[in-house]
Length: 288
Image 1 (cartoon, rainbow, N blue to C red):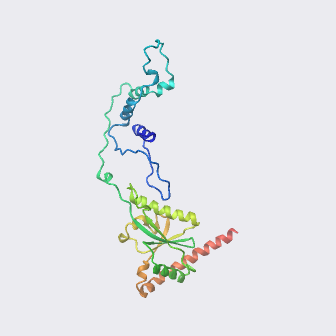
Image 2 (image 1 turned 90 degrees about the vertical axis):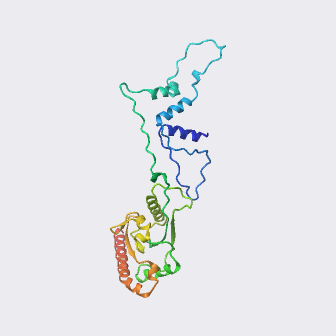
């Protein structure tokens, strides 16, 4: 066995959990080849496993047999460090029990349940993302078609929110790797993945997000996105942003009546954009 495998055996025998990488990150160097052994949790307590490893360890040099031709010498006193480091000394420490205390039988681990035995699959979803002036984050389930992008740009221009062409649309899919490993909590990891994607975009682009605009319904029909965004009292707990919900862009493409019904809500959204923008401009002027 290699040195790394030997180290993991001793850590496991002492009851110390060894952690390893869970995913292979994109563009990361491949993991060095190693003769890993697929082991299952042993029913033997760590104390007894460490005792077995010590029994298999070679004897110290001071206890090795000398040639018969050598003259008998007085027994040498073993240095304190060597005595403590030897397997016999460690066995003596392990065998030491407080006086008057009875040995308790080792507790057997509970058999794995059906939930823990079956590997969990990651949640799968995709989003289309657009950021308006670094302030409002636009999200839609799935990909945003060219017609939907054109309609979104026209709606935002009519409300006085967006002037000019619509910013580029970014598509985010989860999981990020097709060969993702089994996960412990698919919902929590999906939320962390989405939050990390948004946080990374904020860091790179210098956004200062104020609101999330979600186009479409959030309900059982949009599972698992309804649970991933975790909207409660108008606030996305996953992204820590207030949420505005509008109709799906695909439904607005069906006819003029749907656009007329949506027009009052779009005007109110434009007023909110202008009010927040004017407050920010006054604060910037006051700072100077």
